[in-house]
Picture 1 (cartoon, one colour):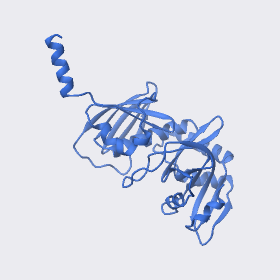
Picture 2 (cartoon, helix red, strand yellow):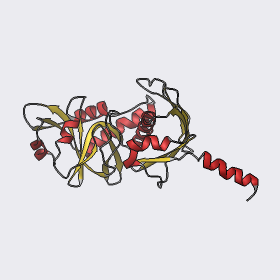
Picture 3 (spheres, one colour):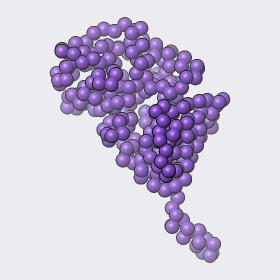
Picture 4 (cartoon, one colour):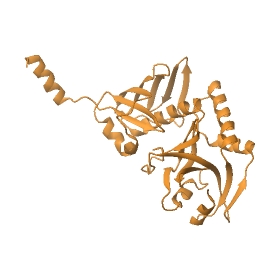
Length: 279
């Protein structure tokens, strides 16, 4: 071995190449290639069930990491110029090209910043395909998935925890709905409050229905007309851009969804027998 090759080997042993991490959610993989070591280790606790470094990535981000803490703005600013999307937030700046499927993110050494980027990219991808991320818990049972949407405090987490033995949690906060040739599927997601460790499993199931939650003195299911269903759905959809084209896509996706998937109001008390009505 030449002296120059020996020096290169020694340098690689002292400074190992940063490990990339591929996070696959809803069948869509996004690879992060950091400029420093430790990134993968930092996000493993949160995304362990969703890491799949063997998956072919839909997008690949070069990640420039910084250690200086910066406050996260309440809302990210999302904009588009041609095929380039850009995100601006105190702890995160990112750009990516929808034609090349490559991008660059500048963020803190934190899964919190990565989570924000993942949510935004997935919302845009899903809307183009007729799906969306929804403020809802979701549970798979007997081969079908059920979504439970509502405002904060409506009981999304409560009803998922009341699910009977054998039910599988897909999300207790943000549900992933994907449209396909054979209908809609709900997928497990790692998206939850940052004071909680994700409990959801990385599986999917055909969507059987959506329940709009309301706490009450009894367990009852009320019919909902398509217009009301669409408005309720749109109030709970995660969406970060005012781009006219994507807003139109979202409205069309919501109208198509409620024409094909049953949406009902579920008035319930926090007791396990409410699940006798969910089918």
